[in-house]
Image (cartoon, rainbow, N blue to C red):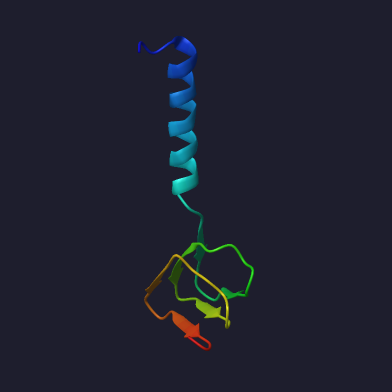
Length: 77
């Protein structure tokens, strides 16, 4: 079966949507900043430098990168 222009376009759009969806979300916290992840919050990657992150019971993250002088609290983990 030969691909048509419509099929090719459909495949290209699907591939780009997958790339965007797969990229995930991220948040950065700088010196003195803090955040709390609650149940129901969207899971994301957290990058911190001199900051504080608390993950409450039921909260989810994709990844936590804690650099110099950062505090990570995993409550009920």
